[in-house]
Image (tube, rainbow, N blue to C red; front, side, top):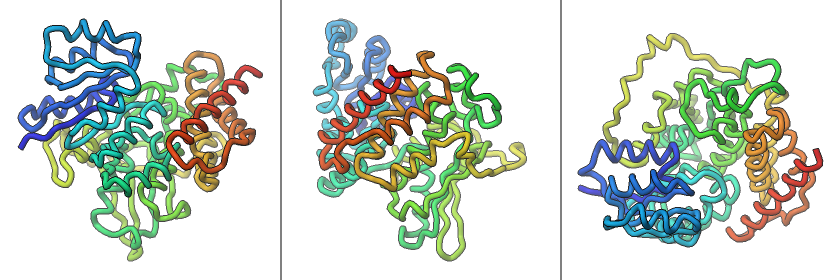
Length: 383
């Protein structure tokens, strides 16, 4: 049986991994929509290869370029933020939501409002707008399938029990490339993005290095698996073999193990509730040799502490944390601030913000996001 898929963020790392699986099973999938931010050439090539119904570029200035690149094909060309939402809402069996950052919020909501099954790789959707998004899922009968390896692992482990039987959830963290680095002030962007286990984009790689990625995942897990923040823990696991664990009240702990390759959790979502073939080699624990675990060092990497505080505060706080972090990471990658300044800037914005405490709609969340970004930029300009 052929199933249809739309991929929001088709030219990013998650989009590429998703299309790799689709490419390996061409008879099983038809591509409805592909979107990208500004990479017209790659988007057009992918749209032609997969015979997509529509290709959307977010950058409106690239409309004529996209249209020319698709000339002679049957692929419809569209541009702009409105077109992104329309692409997300198109009929499809599954929508892969892989746009990075808050730019993905509105398209995710558009898919949810149509009752789609959404494979959610955009963690900001639940970090910044968790209450709003989960309420919309319930209202419109949509389904969220977590793509992040940790949340997908938890999702799989929960197939063996019920939420009210859970004693604790443990998110594993690799610790990133800087866990053993002494002088964090001297870290360069190239060093920060050199993740030892995962092949990811620059922003998420820096988030892994700061531990903000795990902090954001803590907030995301809080919304996906409402067992209470006090039951969600983080442990550093440098080998990245165990992706998360769920402990039940009878003392049993279920863990999901697998290679550090996003095609595994993506395949889990695409085939759910079944399984599909992937090109992964069998897991060889004997060659791995050992699995080690450590408590996070929140003195050197305060991101998880800040994220937990934001989750406990609720309301606008997680959106403020996320927005400030995006500004700080961009500044670091541009060489404007030192690595250690990222967490300090986020904390300063959280402490200085007097934004409305409880956004009730996606529009209100986006207002908070924009205001927090302006505040973060103001703090940067003061330095």
